[in-house]
Length: 265
Image (cartoon, rainbow, N blue to C red; front, side):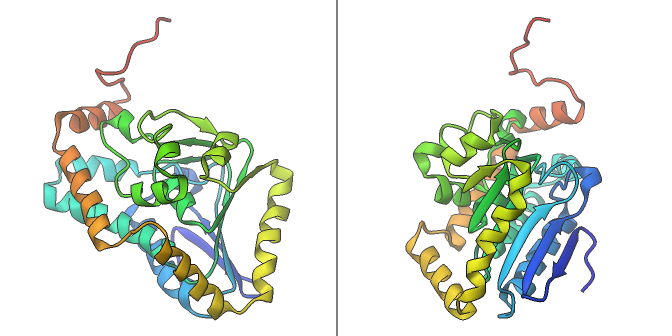
């Protein structure tokens, strides 16, 4: 299988390394990357042969969130088109969340917006200590809607409300305290830590692992079609408001939005 935005490699043990591979764009979630991650989850992640998947990013940043071209297109799109595009992201996250094989995230550099959403659907997420995190949506006048169910399932409501709405940048140590990442580690310890998470899965029955993982999801917070539809509707609603149109336009023009307090120079 040929991938244009991913680098996918399988070793002799059945461990698959999936790398977001558009480093020149800081691995933003383009329409093509979203489609390829969805396809990867449906095929490699559920083939019964994969013992574990390690998900990482090429270049300096794990994932910088939404694609600039996608944002431009949303300004001109109608409600139905915006909902279709939001559904593609929602379906990708759900595909990763329901993947049969264990999914281990290896983060570095930065995880913003949708990048945090991906981190929150991993079974284990390890981050280099210097990694930065941000729910940047409200800075643009929109909301972290489609990633919301997975973020809240991972963090709990109380912890999420500390960072979910402020667009504040926070570090890996705080991300660990909030539950987004399992462990924050120095860069030179990250690969060894990833291997330590992979190793136990090579000693257990892969079918039982997939069944146990599904049980954990079924017993956890509900994330079904009704929940996903509601997040898509809420995002479409906010896009139709004046803040979203102004905030996205200001971002694309590289100027501060009207609501941003100007710090004296």
